[in-house]
Each structure stands twice: as structure tokens, then as C-alpha cells.
Length: 564
Image (cartoon, rainbow, N blue to C red; front, side, top):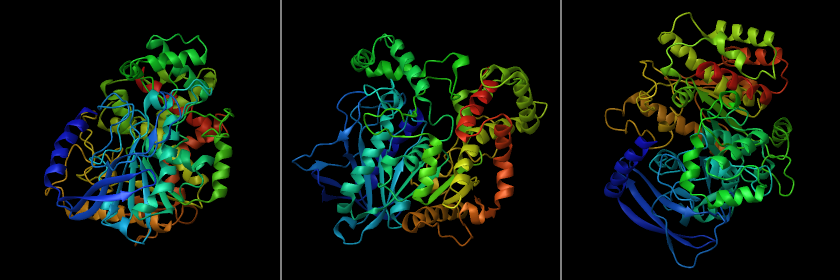
């Protein structure tokens, strides 16, 4: 986002001008790197070592699987973030596979091996980066953990597919896989323990975390996971291969390549195209009847690639079978969502600009081949009865927002929590504080919403690009929330259990934790009746057996309701 870039430039001058910086050297297997020592960061009084822009992967050619970065012979400066991957909003470079490693002061020179937290950034698989200005380490490393963040390919560069070895897709996910492999090979020299890696992410990064949780390729690369507002079971997070191929050929035609040619010819043409044209055409509108994932642009996301057998695919089975195998592996999981996560869809779809719409008119336009007229009529009546009052006012705005949240975030998140109920610590983030994101530019209603990403400023320093932390916002409630969230996240990374004064047990034993000014536990029946049971009932009564089926049906149905 443009405002993120502007703030980043301002904050960059703050970082370079006000931190006490010395250098620190680490010798990795690939070569020597020279990072920065902040002793301390005057804004937080936290001391740490930072290695920014470490190259971890090389892309042999556009749309091809990345390989490990070859060794270097002379010391490499790692004092600035690497370039972002191709995207519409930020300056970028196709050579973008870089990571940041943040450690407690001097941990690379000690014998103690610290837990590692590896973070996958979000933003819909089409923008953002691992920028240290957005994901500052101060709060986390102060609890004696090592933080690793990394870029991965986005949009078409990361997820274009033709369903063959020529263009297999899921490159963004395999980039993150390569980063996790790098951590296993190199983190020891930073003072980290490769046997204690916790993978965590937010939004699309959270969906990627669940993808790794399910994928057999990632089994030995981390021991526990935290998923914040995103699930691989969500409609927007994983597409059928056929839809991924269709979108890729639409893009190919848009940049002047013939989609009817063989795969090798199409990819050769796309590799010769200007990357600006590829990035620019990712936002071309899809025909309304073809909207699958509820986006109003040509979004590229992971695909189910289980039938690609030449190399081990990222998903080597159906999602239902992958879930069963992941359950047997028994990895602890923290999994949750925010009360008004759906605001991110509101901002993408501009639905708020449409002062009036008619649910009855639009539901029948979706998925005509999947459900019959009587089922559509019943669905529209049930949904309208649950969510919508008769007039369009601020109450209705909140109802629409709840509808977005429930279908796109809450339902798929709880599907995961229920399936892995003996392994999962479930939560709802419901704290409205002044560090949270300001979405007033896209959501012009005076409502106290706990938005998508609202928890991030309490986990990472300098995440809140719209309201930088200052003395006015350092109130007791904000600081207490920061302390509590960081403690839960880091104790889970250390022990597999989030340590708290409140009884927070796995879903099977204790329900869900509602995180607010007064944090409390809600039992399973009460919590799921509000956020899950309605959509589960609709799924079952409509003849859908697996959550992934209904998730590829309901959001597209409902987005059409609001868009057309």
C-alpha cells in the first residue's frame, strides 16, 4: 500500500539516525555476514542483533522453483532489508528471496540454543514483504527467542500455474519451504535451536502456515505453529488446479501470449514479458459469473497440486487426507481470528460504496450448477434472517462486516480448531486499542471494530503504519495487551503451551480464549454457536460433506451478493 511505503521511508530515517549501531559478524555455511547491533533501540530500550537482507534463495528463471543461494567468498553486508518481490504497491525486484534474522544481543556467541519463531507475512499473497520497519523484532526478542522473517514470491510470480512441470505453481509456498530449510541448516550459528522452530503467520501468511502444517514436505522443519486470521481451508487461500490454470491463461492473453499454445511456449512468452505488464494485469476484472474466490481481480494463490507426480508436490493428497495425516503428527497449534477480520474484504471489494443491495436478487446468480433453485431460495432466506435488518444503516454495516468475517475467516478457522481440537489453542482477538490498524480510509463508519491485523502491533514493534507508537498511545491497557500477547506467543514457542494466569487449554478441554481488556474463556458450545454452527448447518443441509467443498462455495456466493 502506498501509505505503507511513505511511512516506511519516514521510519527508515528514524532507524538509521537514532539507533546506537555497531556491527556484528556471523559465519554461516554459505559465507560470512555482517549485521547490526542495536544496543539498545532507544524507542523500546531493547538490545538485539539484526541481520537484514540475507539471501536465502536464487530464482533460476521466472516461474521456476527456487534453489539455495550459492556460497559467497567475501563478507556480505546484511544491514538493510532485501527488495520486495514483484507487486503493485511497493518498489520490487525479481531477485527478492531475502530474509531477516533478529537475535537477543550476542546470542550467536553463546552455547545456549534459543527457540526460533519464523514469521510468514500476509496481504493476500499479492503484496507486502518482511520489512523490518513493519515487523520489528523488539517485543519478541526481548523474551529470549530468535525471530526470522522472509520474503516469498507473490501474485503471478509466485502462484501462476499451467498444471504441469513447466509451470507447477505454488512457488510462493516452496519459497517459504526453502526459507525453513535454510533455518534448519543455518540457525545454530545465530544461537538458535533448529529443533525448536515455531512457524507463525497472519492473514495469507496464516493460510500458508496451515498449508505447511498439512504438507508432508514441511514435516521436519518446525515443531509447532501459530495461525492468525487465515486458513488453508478458506476459499480465498487455495484454488482447484483447474481454476489456477484458467487464471494463468487469462493473464497470459492479457500480456500478449497465446493461451492456446503448449505450456512450454506460453511460459517462454511470459518469461520474456515485462514484469511490469505481468504485475499490472494481475488486477484485471474477471467476468462476474466466473468469480470463484470472491475477489474482483485476477488473484493468484496456492493451488491443489496433488496430481503432479514428477516431483513431490506441496499438497500430495486431498485436503481431507492431509488433515488426517497432520492430526497423526500431533503438532501443537495456536489458531484464531479477529472479531472483524472481514473488514479486509470490505476494503478490497468497495462494497460500502453500494448503499443498497438486495440479497434475494443476487444469491441465485452464484453456482447455478451446484445447487438447485429451492436450495438457493432457502439459503438466501436463512442468511437474510440471520444477518440483515430491513434498512441500510450503521447496524446493517456491522451485519455485513460480520457476514464477511464469518464466511471468510471465522468458519474456516474454527474448522481447523475443531478438527485438531486436542492440539489446538483457539482464540478470538477482541481488543480495541489505539495501536490497532486505522481502516477509516476504506471503512468510513464510526464503529469500534477489531480489524484484520489488529493484533500485529502488539506482537511486532512499528507494525502500525497509520498511527506510529508515541507517548499518547503508551497507555496501561495497550502495554498490558502487548505484554500479554508477547508472553503467550513466546511461551508457546518455548514450550508448546501458552502460559497464562487464565486457564487456556486446548479446544477439546477448555473452549476458546476471548482476548480483550478482560480476557476470558468461552466454552465450545457457546463460542461455536455464534461463529460456526450456522454455516455448518447450511453446509450439511445443502449436501456438502467436506468443509473445503462448502468453503469453495459459500464465499463466492456471498461476495456476488454484495458486488452485483
